[in-house]
Length: 236
Length: 236
DNA sequence: GTCTATAGAATGATAGAC
DNA sequence: GTCTATCATTCTATAGAC
Image (cartoon, rainbow over all chains, first blue to last red):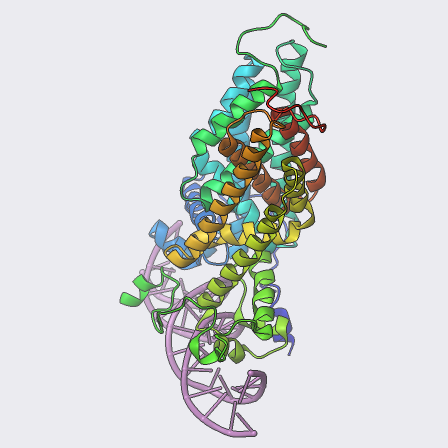
């Protein structure tokens, strides 16, 4: 009787095991806190592949174990549960995504160049980004009510938004972009890019490269950027 | 041994049962071919809700039966398998989506008005459209190798693309839009709109209405449409 | 057409040997 | 750390009564 009701919430009601800020469960963490663990990185990479290609529910522990050439039980040595593995996978992916995004920012280069790199990044790193979008989308609906994961995802998008608008603002301040609303423009760009990610999954004939170049051209028009350096504060 | 290999392909290897152009399996079709069947429509509507909210693998036959207040076995009276139900659900959804889209075209109205209606449609019919996008995305990956479903989805997007570019072409011909490439512009618009759909699922604070209005404004600029009727072939 | 009951397969997870 | 073996549960699907 209580069983049939519980079947809604896929979270196993057993080992709740709080305190999970780190990636690994405590038994598996070495003296170094479990970081720089090659083995685990491979686990997470394989999981990311599978969870993104199919989704949480359709990927079985066996699938993951098989992909790694190890036994099912070993996964439970490193992670509490399938859900826990998923959580770690997402957090790992967010971390990588951050690195990609930050790498573009650190350079003190011309905003137009950074913006171009940003767009090209979406083409060259397509595989990683689209995986991330798919997992984020999958998360909603199969894990409603896991605030840690939700926070990871939102934190990433927030960072992305801030970075994009910052780049645009810099361009405006230097007088090479038209004085648009940076945040609004940033949101427009990244929303379109997300559209590209879905479409390239859904539509077999979608031309990602062309779609991004199209955006590129239109953004340059919207920013009134001709490709040549403009005189400072020409328009304002 | 062969069992462990087969576990990859989730399609049960049993009742393959070809000849499935219609929605229902033959035992369940009345003399009218099974169309206009209220009961089945309810089945499909409930399935759509669930499959979109969660996904194929995480929705169980029991979930669907419970949502409908019927017994599990009844679903197998109407459909061959879970996969078959999914197929019927998608095809039903595509049909509805077509109607929505066509309804906007039939009117012989001003292209600018149709385009506006198109965008507003994405806000008001958000629930249906986003369900469609999510299911389409879910399909890839959990049903790789089901050409019928794939075709349904691609057919819809193809129709959408044609319609949008047609509207834009009309506007150009009437001299109220700038002479852009209609297909390219159409693709740009619908890609962005798909981006809106994902984002509104992923990001809890995404403002769909604002995002679409933003697009609207930018499209008007790109088409050099001021809101007032221009003189015929002012620019060309 | 709709239900009860249940078979048969697959899955998440654990205990315990090495 | 990694594996073998296995349990409990859940799920799809079928048989058959009404």
